[in-house]
Image (cartoon, rainbow, N blue to C red):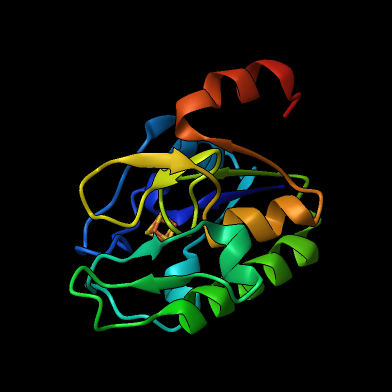
Length: 157
Ligand code: SF4
């Protein structure tokens, strides 16, 4: 079973109440091959909600307690909620025996390889979102919608 970002399946769980539908990911769900999760909702956040980014770091530093996740004005700290969402997502991944995850690129939760840099200006830095980092550390192979074709070519599903 594959863990997938719920917003890629058309679930309106994105911060602005919309989704990031990718028909290829929705097809995996419809074929019974995927389980959708939204780490930010699993962490207890409402939808819609403010946009947040990891400031001065990445998911690895957040998990070490060395970086925070803040709103654009810096007043709302949702680090605790993001970490809870990552932990709950890992619990689900373990429960379904997921070896792979397809996650939304660049998100502070789901991004893998590149994430937004914390300035809310669409700039990107190398690094993983909090959930992607925790799943990766626990041996789950992660792809995003941006290299999904690579996944579909190499994985026999
Ligand atoms: Fe939820 Fe991840 Fe999609 Fe954000 S990118 S809405 S945390 S599933």
